[in-house]
Image (cartoon, rainbow, N blue to C red; front, side, top):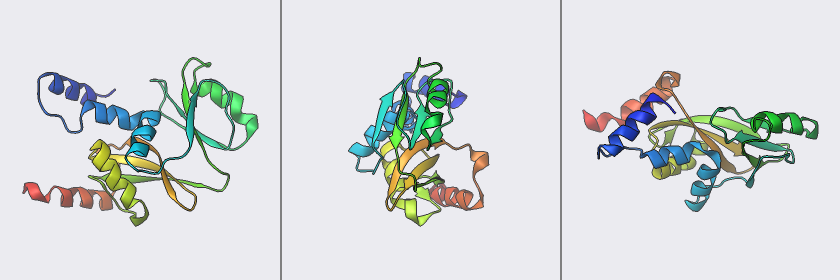
Length: 176
């Protein structure tokens, strides 16, 4: 939880309309919640399940504990026990496992106000904006002939490149 999160919580408690809402931002960043909301909204997502035990590769594993943010892509069964132990903090927390095939591409794109600089993910970026109202975020996708949303992560303003900053300026032109 960041300073921005707690500021938004205080604002909501005080009756100020917050955009995105606390629920929207939490749902977006907790992978299994994101997957279920995205699926219900018509966004393609991979088959996934929650476990705190071993899993079957190939897959992408996301921790659900509040102390970890990284994910792991696992192709070999020899790595399963070590990664499961690490991601679950000794099998105490759950993890979200997304099934993939060996030949997928996993890519990440920056989104600004529902727009991405890559045409291939524009539809998903727009739907993520409509669903979660995150002004700036990263979307991780799985590409295997079709594009599926794998996760949404935060994107600090300083990580935006010139193309994304141009999108941000364009999105804010209405305020001038």
